[in-house]
Length: 504
Image (tube, rainbow, N blue to C red; front, side):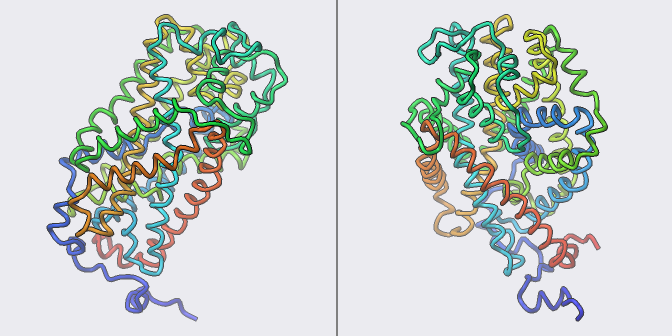
């Protein structure tokens, strides 16, 4: 039996006719209330800031380390060009054409319009646990102003008798940890957590103990949630206050904030890279990072992890791209911004690897182990154990610690802005007449709900909830949503979609 034609599907109500101008979807008053970007550069910086997340800083370099070094770049760039870019441009053009946030963007196909709400739920879920990362980073940032970095020495109230000041985390990890091959950021963090809590070794570095016993104050497992850690609660609250303040005027205020938050990470990464090049062993780390092991390309796991990293890095199906593009002017040509953004994401991941592996080479030299051993041992806690330990061994450690965690703060907040705007923008678009002029209460109310829901994550067992939220909810929903999105546009709606953009 012949497949039902696109016209018949449209006429039967599966998809809506979009032959008329998309600007008619919202009346002019509501569109004005939603706001537009002040300039194309603001839109570009917001996209780059949203796309380049903390995963590019600590996750991509370690994936390279365990998947053939420079050889990993081959499948990564292939998937970035063939999967990441088309899906990214699809979302940019879709959001710009319909002028709605992600939750309502797929009303073009009423049969599958629930995909938009799936995107909102994914962003909401990620915001629920992502605030934990923001809290950890802010806590380290504040501690970086101490006269002596607290993760550099033993003898503090959180240290145990197993703490050894002269012990490198790489040496301890190589002798006591088994590094598994999981992909998720949360798994990487918890490899260090579980391995250290259950390790039989009597030698633990002060950086590891600071992470486990001061920052997390971790319990033995999910069944033991322990008590609320108020230092993390306060950090989370401050984080949400900054997010609300940055978005209080919607894209008008966000467009100004991103001039700083989207550009600062590159400046700080460059400063850290120059400093890292001066460390003993830095060149060894870089050489190991960029030297390809082509035998790894025969392993399907390498290609799988490259594909997953592309989706995690670009963030399709999170809804943020559609939401930010919905604030563009209708006739704006956004293909150039899309190409720049995708290329920036790929470049940032590679550049962050150079910065990280200058320190990996230094740590390996100090510990007397190979760069490969140092990278694998440090991978699970790269941002919160290995890099802080390397900083503690540098001259003027407080300065480099402040710069490093300030860079992570700007990266983390940029990603949060996009996801938070996805959630609040959908609420405003669903009830435009009732809430569009009450944007500030909506922002505060949504942030307050997310803050209260995140309190269990600030408990001693919160790290285990973080793992569940990141891997068992978001990861699978991300892949499912991307496949469904491609099916809607490229299979069901392709004719009308192309007509609407004059691509045929």
